[in-house]
Image 1 (cartoon, helix red, strand yellow):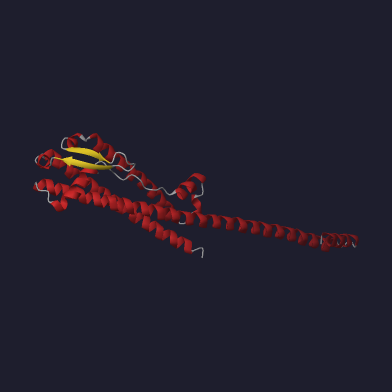
Image 2 (image 1 turned 90 degrees about the horizontal axis):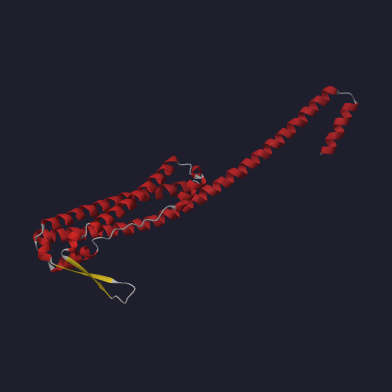
Length: 249
């Protein structure tokens, strides 16, 4: 093709047809420019295609992360609701100064789990990877980007609250140890069980002890609300991710 163009150009020059040669030269330049533009367009299309595939992959991984987080939150929520119920049963028994056989199991379990707080919620690893690599812009939906940032902050806050509660109740353990003795069962087993022996009448006649149990009732209820809010946010994000994924169909 280049040889043909060269021969045409030489023939035009030889015939001294400058005007036609000028038009031909301009046409040749335009062809070169158009070829370059087409090549750039193809390259841009390929790059955009790669970014779309990368964005789709991130969205898929974010969905998997949220599924795992949802399982963690549901587990923590169930545990927290159970502990909140047990704390309330313990408070009602102490205030009425009567521990019925039907509520004894929940009462004793509350004593055994008095210091235990759930502090495990999986992180959204794909979001953290996007954040550190500068790929967060691949999430085109601005609300999604903001929602994931809020979810990460909320997770850190919940873990901090759990750890603070755990430390606070551990450091203030003297009042409960005054009436409760913890016994480890099956010491030869890897999975140890703990039983609690206690003086119910003494606890029921100690206003300070009852106030501490009342305080923990509120703590567990507060934690329950926090997990429910977090679970709601996770579910909203999961729904939004599904909407974004459908755009690639």
